[in-house]
Length: 322
Image (cartoon, rainbow, N blue to C red; front, side):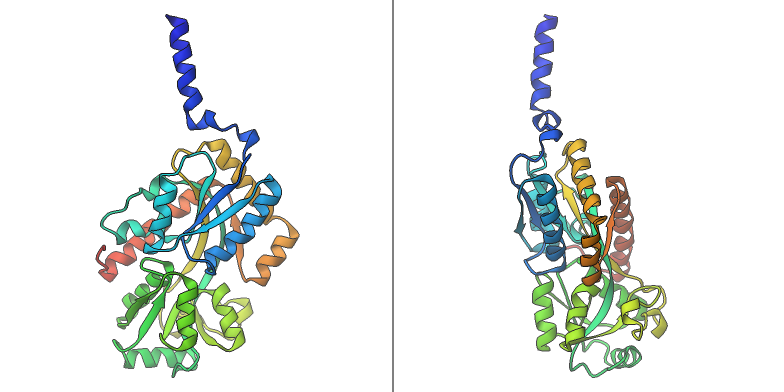
């Protein structure tokens, strides 16, 4: 009888996620990274850099599958129900694992159940306006939007994204009203900024700088507590009368719930090793990105803090769940 119970127990353990994949053999086939934004966005660009490194270091293809939509929820749902074996991962902006729980009445996944792998990079957000926007400086911008409250519109990368919530934070702190125009990702939003179809966007420096440097749009202010070295002449929002206006964004890799810890650890260590390489440091500097890395526990703490932080912004702004 005892032997029979032992055999049954061994069979059950053999079917468990932890036993189904030997971490020393992982990965032994291609890994899919489902990206929460369309191709061309900030998360997509950063993930491609890290996918190259993961492939080089672990010897298997890491293939991107872009599934933008619903603030990242479409991709998150797919990853949430994927087998927890390390062969399906998610690359996302903060929204699907932080703020979306306060923005949607129902999610078909529990953001808190994802296994954190690592934060890839982070970057400050900036105020970017269309090239023919009437205000030429941050001071002029503040005067103009106050005089035209309710008449301007702002783009975002989607409902609940950091670009959306940063604009909501701005309106809450200033009392200025603007109309939200959500897009499905960074690329479409920036296309309409360049075309002059929307007035402004609060977005990450790395993508905004390319347009600023090429004269296709203009950065007027940064959403940091100090000026950015590469934009020494650009003031912070606090300097032009919006105190406590701080906003940055980041992108991270998550795994499905119950993904074995040894696999998560292996991925995390590989990402951290990649960050330390001199050629990667140079690449990050060129793209105006700050590499992060750290442990899965560090990422979990950040996710919990950001969930509370942006949840407060959503409540104060009176945003109703969809």
